[in-house]
Length: 147
Image 1: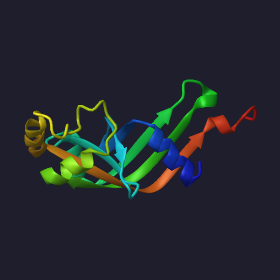
Image 2: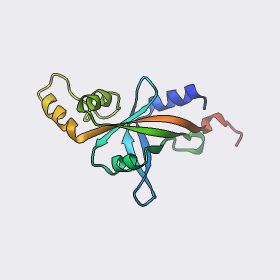
Image 3: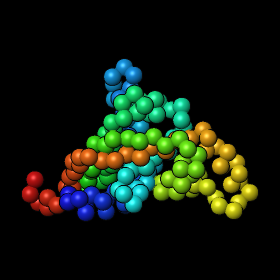
Image 4: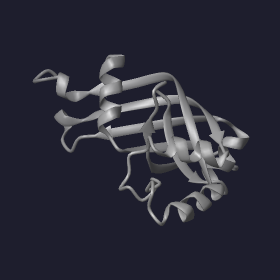
């Protein structure tokens, strides 16, 4: 895929597999809802004490995978190799969480009576900004009859 096709594909998807390196050196893959900011960084949110945060504090590199398709001809995938930045400031966490595609449960309902409770929970959450430095992609729909 071209970079424009990759961006469009990532904009259309909702879930990403985030792979960090665990304390024993083994890959630690987890599915996460994500968003993309204006700079093209992938954004996730998680609890500050989660294993992925501990892993990224130790080694800020990650591999990210988005895939779709139920048949061979429909398979599409993007692998992103990225550097991670962990955001802990509650205001920046809340600001960045607005980019994440989700069921709405992670977003702050502005003006609602729950806004205070949600804001209070921001002190337990972190946002991770992944800056990709390499992409690998494939789109089997481009193969047509030639595979």
